[in-house]
Picture 1 (cartoon, helix red, strand yellow):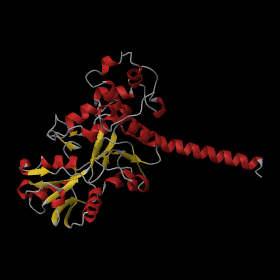
Picture 2 (cartoon, rainbow, N blue to C red):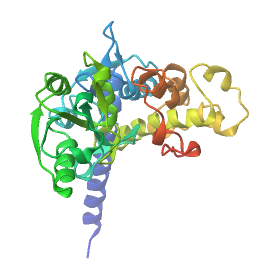
Picture 3 (tube, rainbow, N blue to C red):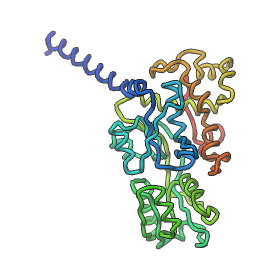
Picture 4 (cartoon, helix red, strand yellow):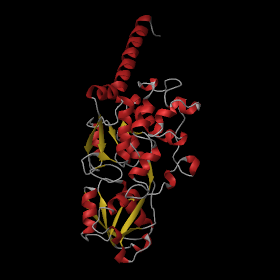
Length: 341
């Protein structure tokens, strides 16, 4: 039986534990505000997703996630420090606290979600692994790749997927492994391999970097599911919620027709969904430690998901990727955000 003294000690311990958790949960937000910038882990240069433009400014679908978080937390989408990471070092950088967010065309998998101390906050691009070949080879299907030399980037899910696919189809291949995407596409262009394999979106980005993009083609075969999205450290639920809902705000913005061009005038909308989204009816940022206009800041400064998609990887970009499964749920795609209410 527990006496009063024991109960007091347990209550005190509980209070300390709860206080400790609360402090831990608030630490990333507090550190970000103290620093005045979001530390964002991005790729080592993948056009359309995260790459510096001619003036050195980072652009891309993954970059916009970090800009959205900065807009929500700091009121300034440009308050981001970008840290370029290759596939091998990306998880360590997040685990160690070097970055606050890993937004780097990273596939959400069981192992990564449960054993690395990370939480994925959503999917900003549904993808799948494919193959790029030289047109001169005359290959039109993946089933014709038996015995091929294949360029592949280390530290990625593509290595395992490739082995699984060839094993399942009783075929053989010669892996040519590189550390970075730049080295991988360089090996393909130099003729060190017959095929380059990666996510189809990455293949589109790498293809436009070739000296002769028209000399290569991406096969129609897709051999895996690759849900790509941002990740944060486990143990900080507040920050997890902020990053998650920053992406959801962009998706809801598209669904409700709120964009960077009309966000200001939409603040007068009588649509209750829009009023809640833009902070005109209640404060739905309060539970995350944010101001009521957190989503308005995202949509007015970064734009909705459609704007980000089209300018970075869609038909308004050099990649010219169709929306496909990345269309909204009510337009035949997978993209679906919970409601703000």
